[in-house]
Image 1: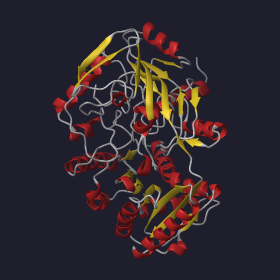
Image 2: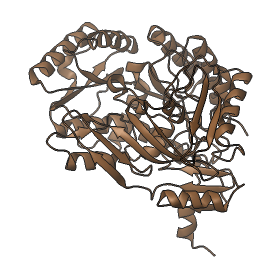
Image 3: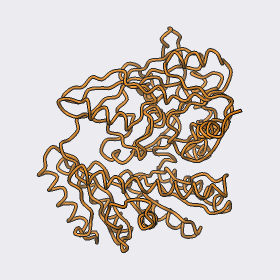
Image 4: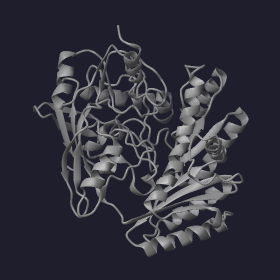
Length: 503
């Protein structure tokens, strides 16, 4: 019989940050590629759920029976090739983003290198980030993980190995063929999809005619193979990083300022890395947690009169350029109705870390509230959107969100990547009725956002919780074509059952 502590540890591997809980017959912790192959060969027919650090929000790594393969012990750096222009690094999938950052800071010479994607949770694993094409705050300037993956090693469910290198294998229109390391041919037809024309999209498989086939596996949510090594390209770190939190009286003022800052960022003389938003509801949540001593105790109190805020970051090797960018930001803030003198600014590493604590505290506060609610309502999971729209529909989508929250009487917290028209609307349900109504409203929003040209998932993926939303984006025939594509690599449909497609 397992001790209480042992059972508690095992139970922690049955959920992710969505707070959905699953079940598993057995959990494996491979340390090498050979271990992964052995698991498949010894269990040729059993469904397998893959896990990384379990920081996801869509239950993608939550097992629904069968075997669980957790890759957290595959956490070695396999190769590092620095150069003046950036170089590359090859890692196992279980290495954490924060570990990678620490390694690069300590080992890059003569110039510090960095991996640009910046998801909220620094304890995310690289394998998980590749599997859902993570992005985060710096995606405004640097884009998502896809742009930095140059090679992948994967183990297929039959134990065969597939290596895909960027620039080596391309589709012929929508036809593709790949050879495994044993020489076996995998071929088929890519679905005929029209993906949303937004800056961030990770809902279903990434498909384009004549595409580089490595991109098929990035964002595939572990449904096509087990990633066992990842080669990433790196960039040189800029000498200076400055940031600010700009408080504004009303949401309309912030939306106006966003448009100005985006126009300014088209110039190389306005090197804006991040453009993030915090609504009044998010600030209220943060302020309460700060006053009650839960967070941000070493920071200035969040202003009582703030209607919302924007978080911005700049990087450059030219200090004078950053000073000019701050000047332009202050002028734009004043024109939008804000007061530069009442903003928070950071021009050194210590204060940047403090501002980032403010940035990352919002989702943590939401998670804390959900954990408390689950003590009495265990069937509730986190309700957060991952929707994104084209630039021209930013004001329209905010109006849609606020109207739904107001009419539904929901407690909410809106924050996130407004530079990419991608904010996270978090609802905090206090009973089952609110939970059901919130899910229904999200589905209604998704339908309307698809009609705006947007996507139902910009960075979190579909997982098991949002398969219904995928039906808003693609037809039944297109989703079935994605299933047929999966069968080319996973004929028995063993890998990550329930992810992307309903079982």
